[in-house]
Image 1 (tube, helix red, strand yellow):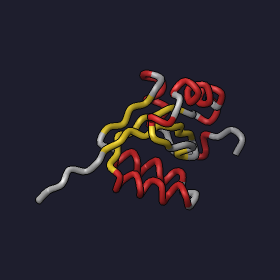
Image 2 (cartoon, rainbow, N blue to C red):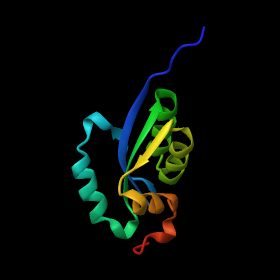
Image 3 (cartoon, rainbow, N blue to C red):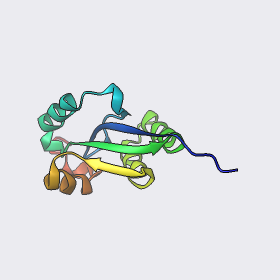
Length: 107
């Protein structure tokens, strides 16, 4: 018997180093995330939303908890059932460049 997996929406900021924050959407204020991302434009920060099952979310969390932020972003990118990025075409274009630590002017 096939069981339906629970899918929830996660949101946060991704930048040139990977996932900077990852939380349930219902627990976050999107306006605050947008302000934070805009304040870190030099690091190509963008706000994202990812619809993920618990199984795939756990994989992303394991990577984040071990400091593998770039790998976490790449895993989220391929395991999310749907992925949305704020900022229109500019945000989508920046998101495609991530992760890439060489984009950080302070590195």
